[in-house]
Image (cartoon, rainbow, N blue to C red; front, side):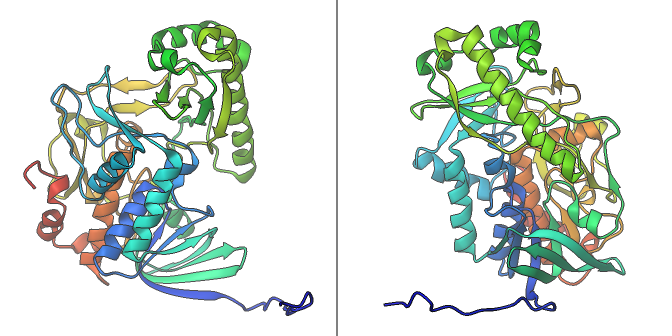
Length: 432
């Protein structure tokens, strides 16, 4: 039997540090980072996936995004445009009953509502199967960058400092943290782009909520929402049949980049969530008389800071849909810019419209071994609002992994584009 005083006394060494080596280090364990890490590990690369949160999943899990959008085109003949790991996700979570396929009445596109915790477990299992090493609870503290190459990242963890040396790096942080810490130029919007705090509701009338009239909700929000501390007049509220929960996305708040402001953002988001519960109870008691919050998500952040790349994707380019010579992913999602408190600015594209994401908007112009994936690639504010959703984020993660694999120790801009696009063919052409 273990003795009660069977302990060892230690003191921290001032020079103590854990040093890790990898071929590719991915910063940010949301859907784009997880996709990049798994893809790179399957290519035989040693991969470290780092995130400041204690678990992986990023906003998809922590912020309860709740729906996977952007995998399909729009219209009555919608078809899938991102494959690979996305196919595994859809097939496996559908089989387990944790993914619900929906066809949007408004857009005709296919979206998927998912069980939050099960998506997180799926990501964890996939990383483990691929051999991805996880560095969680690790806040980026410093970056060693010189002569156009990022060489080392330094993290602060509760177990002491950790350094990661790698040949290539993926910035899936969402806020261009690698470029920022390396001292590279970054873009910030001059006008606010609002975030949302999503949350799960329970104790409502499932049958009635399944047939909810969103326009009626929006109309009443516009009339009396301010009385409940609410600012947004649109959004969505989806019930997951048979699960007893409904996903609410009906809040808006600014998303500052300073630490104290980030703390206030959490409180503001939850205050709005509580206000929405009161609104639903009072204004729609036939459905929500006893409704309550089961779980609050973390603040969901859309656009804060992004890289300055060799090319900036523009609204005009996504409108035209011309395939650039260095295309590595496809997208079809409409422009969805959250630029006012009250409403979202939408720009709709014709049915079947597809546009492309080039590698040149994913590579910082001042670096040779960093590839961004997700919402911190370089686009104008409108274009970025369209490509930041989960479908193209998965495609960008895969593209980043293959580009760095092909680049090796050379500049990622010099990769064999024919070979890269051959590897990514299923995400670029319907016959790939």
